[in-house]
Length: 640
Image (cartoon, rainbow, N blue to C red; front, side, top):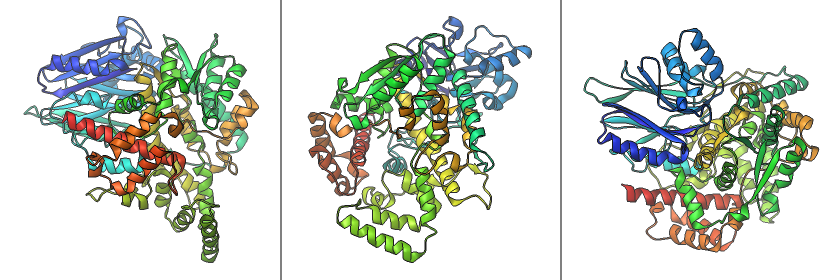
């Protein structure tokens, strides 16, 4: 893993800019640095040494005649097979680093080279013969890649902070991105907070060149990979179970190559436990595993992590979260690392466990991605209930609404439940998906976000993947498949994987995600809903695999998200300061949000109170959403 940055076109004082970029990206690559500058282009790299620790692994790398140059933030898990094919075609290599195959593969296949790569990657490649710059990002968006176009150059970087070192980029806030952020609590690619910066979407490749006057232009942004959902109703449980175990085992084995110490983030959940178990079975020595311990029992799974560790024979360490202060400096420092507004509070425990892990290993396996393919979320069984609800006659729905309203008034049911039930009873498919994946739902969104010329969040939930359904495909299957797409395309890429990259690379830790092996995930997209859930039990197949390899209490425990009790973890000073800045009359949030809507949230959080119809988690997530946007707006005013 590494930090990458560069440009095509003409920048002033390129050597000084190179130094600033290296400084910005040093945390991503503390083991070395490299750059190659031309009159009209530059590639900059900071190295985290993982495979081939010798000087032969230094980047940038070139082909034999140095007509093609490359830098990459990647792990290419099929690099040995690709190297063998290239050697048979006459290509010569100096070391065994996975990145070294990329310029040679491009030489053979052109832009089609990226389709051959298996793994996680953000790649930049300069073709000196064609005078072009290529950028490519992996199929899931495991590794981030941002780019910007100005009249004089096109630039790119692993992180937004590095791109901000370039002059001329428009860093003013993008109102559309802020509106999308209000709904999702993360900004979906290709947007970013800044008008002049875009995020390359997962599974896409970009080509940029200079015209005859030396002006940069984007020639193409094309999708080289798209996922297809094709549920196969003929699949039976026993066959699917065997195939799932076979693919998990193979996916984990592919990701064990490392010339530096390797361990695993063992939270105690089924996914991280399976990854740890299969990894340990492939290793001769006890693998190091790590988890973070929450002081609040309802959030903590340390017992499960320790039980799995004992069962598989790993060497386990636990980090008590109460050793990490929930202070203003701690929280705002982490939020600023992101580079734009971001409100997933699991960033804080993720950063803590990555910091602990980095003291002992350089590479860590994670369980991220298992839920997305194998039905790990409650919305899958809820989709089935909504499908049934919408088949009921109107009189039955009206009777149910009357009963729920009575219970809500008596305090025996959530106050918003009757309204949501009424909305879902008549909602179309896209509206249902939007309801489940928006933190701020449409009615509240209209109250919070000030009128502006932006597109509604609904457009984000329109299906984009290919789905092979027929007239016999049940409505519940269709809704579940649509939810899978929205979860992977919007949440996994822009929130969960982005968080993992920030938390790990902040301390120079490479985090790998075997559950997002391409073959494994592709197979998961063929599963009918009945093999993902059973009643209200999620991850049916993964639980079946786990029953063969993990302690029974771990297999049978309900899913628990990797979240943090923000309202009790933060200290009193944080609550005082967050109330002060967010309720200030000069608050820059007021340019985008109506304070009459959000002020009660902030006040309730600071005073330890509740807000009607908003859950405990929903309240502190909203406050972090506001705080992160406030930090970005405030810092950006100083930069601009």
